[in-house]
Length: 77
Image (cartoon, rainbow, N blue to C red; front, side, top):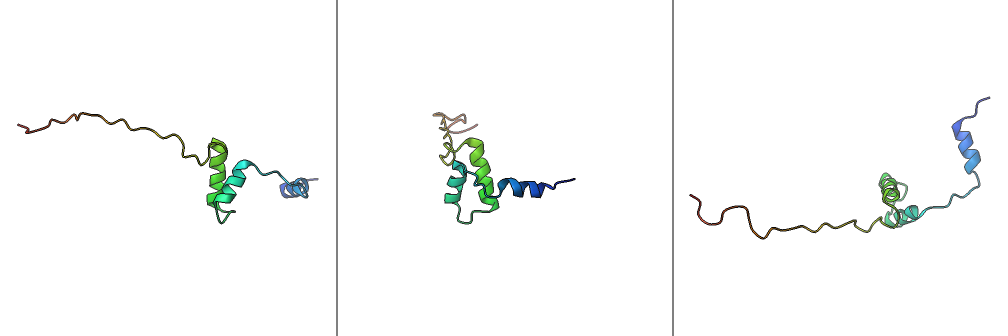
């Protein structure tokens, strides 16, 4: 007796609501067309960094400017 995977999935998820996580709710609010490849990718990125950190812009690096230039100023001979 063999049971196909699709019949197992239908049996286990039929009538049971799976709770949605915070990433799902954040991404669904952001995208107009939700079941899309962009939204799926955004959910994956959100789950990778965590719902608290998703959409905060990440760490901003301060650029260190040198006060002097390494090139010679003035006339070159």
